[in-house]
Image (tube, rainbow, N blue to C red):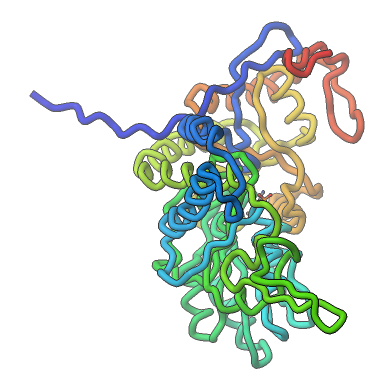
Length: 441
Ligand code: PMP
């Protein structure tokens, strides 16, 4: 007799909507846009519900609920530290999202820091760095060449502090970048490394210590906790010495009227950069999501790999479809990919997938304009836009099969409805789909 080992199951997301179709009726929403924002985990939703009666001010309140809320907020720093495999002395600063985290880091760099990064980064990682020593290098086509390119750029940097900024997983192609290898060369050249983990953290275990990086930025809404919190985790010294990111209550230890002006003593811990009332619900939700993922990585990865293979096999059989790739050769990938389809505009395709098939994908340049345009040029195309399909815990095999079949049908026989550009986007005309009841009227 053989024993059937039951496969571990990935944590479920909370119930997803049924969406109307232009052709009539409705269908379960196939959310293939996890890379933009992931649905809420059922466990996160339950935890938020459980916490809400206790919701109160943190740090400043004497009431019991304030003490509970403060405990929740501060304990979540430990949860994030564990989730990111941080060093014991690393700081955890709560932010709004990855963009906020990287801007905070940019505003905390010691004067004269040289910053080295690939020009194909997401705008959140590409744009915040200022000053004369920002080196944006084109991403080479192999992992090895990427490592040497960073090495070469660091060798040419002036003396002084250095920072390499790198994404863990591309939000355009889903490819994983050689983070540990680049961190090793950065270390040899005396540079620190900031990892944009917006796309890596929801899909793979993260370890600041194993990767030997210095800072990690992530977003709760991509980690199945869409309540508006993110985090910057990493070495405390630059952040402790930096000007507070926002000036205001909570960031200060004391403020005294002094010599006709103000004598301000700023906090030196994470609160230094968290002025104003924090997003305690968002922070708690982020922590619960991290705990859920951290306890279920095998199932999370297995779920995504199975569906990712199914998707790539299916799309390979769609005539005229070309997947965008940053690196040559088989790179490890998360369940995100972008493609162009001969003869079809990405915005039109996305509108048809939504209106006729109930599928949500992203079209455009994915806040990575340089990357998207360059990768399309490699396919022989001239545009700057593509379609992105991204999988996650809300994805089922039916969703994957639906998008593959839809694309084959669209290629074979076109759309069944009329579409026109309205306010800069393709939309069905007419569009008979009713908004959900809570928005109607
Ligand atoms: N980096 C990457 C790789 C991303 O995909 C994103 C979001 N698309 C960001 C940074 C910015 O994240 P957020 O919008 O949550 O700040």
